[in-house]
Length: 305
Image 1 (cartoon, rainbow, N blue to C red):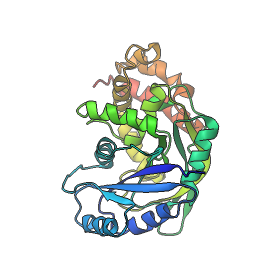
Image 2 (cartoon, rainbow, N blue to C red):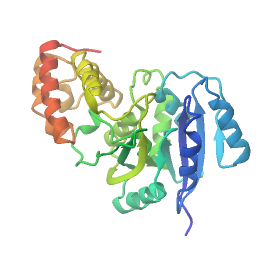
Image 3 (tube, helix red, strand yellow):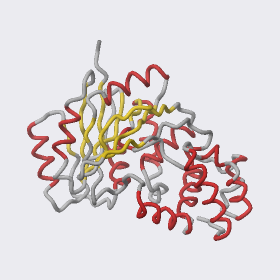
């Protein structure tokens, strides 16, 4: 049987320490054919030279022109989606620069997407630290009607999309670059887009990679007091609800009855939203936090963008 051909989009920044191990785990993928496209946010550790050297020795790597300063992973991934041609591929996958993929990560995604009739796929991951500590990060709780407006489908490094979905997202990004400048996370946006546009997304109850945690993670595991305090500040400042309002507007859901109730950011709407927590978050703990978050925002608000 012909192996599915997968375009892997890898966003790098000061990743010299981990890139080789990440790429080896991508080359070790079974029952698929991969080609890696790398975009480097202007770095100061020699990452550009390293990926150029990799590409000179391996035709399965294409490096996008250097020199741009993105200032974050979201703009770098949007650049990859916008600039890479997906013609000739069956799937598009995201990759961080510092993880270790299971050998069957992509082949399992292919099988599950065919089995479930899905255009988007994500999965659980196993976080690991330099100390040797490991922890399963479970994101595969049952999807909810409106979860895509309030959370991603899991870590973006697990995402695999059919080329059909990826090309539609690509067309949207190409036409709406200015509108997307305030989006926090490329993975949340892609999950929201697919769900809002009626594409089926499957979240696998399987850990597909080792999710490296270190001091320089832009987005890592939400664990510990530091992460909790950060989330509290985001809630009190209304940043989370503002991002949900932005996502809803980008998806043109302004007139949807559910969205209209709370997207003005006013107090009564936020109180109403608190009672809809089960429709908005997948995990029970997050549903409880969602209730308290909405009530806190109702006291601190209103929030508008």
